[in-house]
Length: 164
Image 1 (tube, helix red, strand yellow):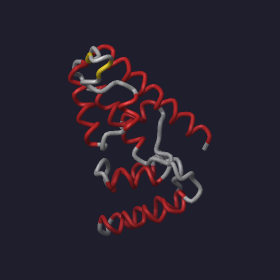
Image 2: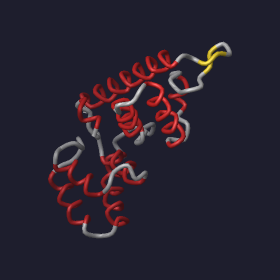
Image 3: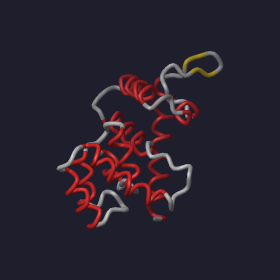
Image 4: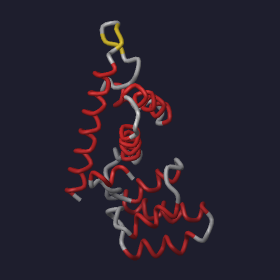
């Protein structure tokens, strides 16, 4: 995963649950992440519980994740966005593809629809067809705004994880 290159990990099982629900990861990857300590709240007991349930149905596996997640989320604030890390992962993937800036911005535009039009993306002015004073922003400016947004998001996750 791209986020690991920046020492960013899943902070809890809610992020894993959201990834599973949106088909961004599968149960095997959740177990591997747990065993590799890429989910910061994981421990051996949770990993064993997940390994046992992997053989069961996807629904049963998801129920175990939801149980673990529910306990963790009681300690978190209510503004937690479990999709936020996956948005960053997809932005990083798109930027790391060997394509020109316009093609990357087109991919970001597709992700904008996939993630149901995130308002924070609109505010950062990195989406294709963004206008300022009636004129579309140049590709170079959009890409600079995208890089700035990604840097802010990476910093957010690094700071958040250093507090945990």
